[in-house]
Length: 61
Image 1 (cartoon, rainbow, N blue to C red):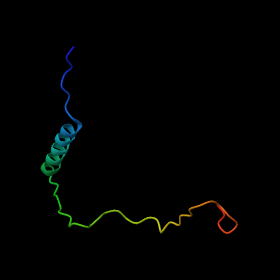
Image 2 (image 1 turned 45 degrees about the vertical axis):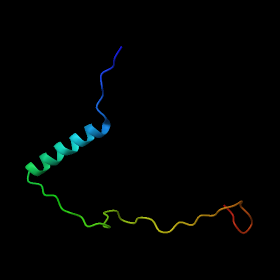
Image 3 (image 1 turned 90 degrees about the horizontal axis):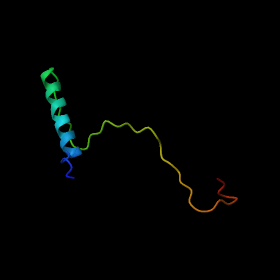
Image 4 (image 1 turned 180 degrees about the horizontal axis):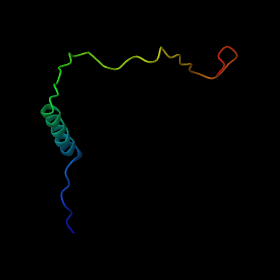
């Protein structure tokens, strides 16, 4: 029994993004260019201290 060829996930995703972008632009949205190296993520945690090795009197866990 031959199975139907399936669309790959990347093709479906590509098409979905293309459709969403077209709808966004048609509704009056604008696309901004973000310079390389710029991120929208905020640093939420400070440095972490990792203790390696077995627990001892000087190094309790």
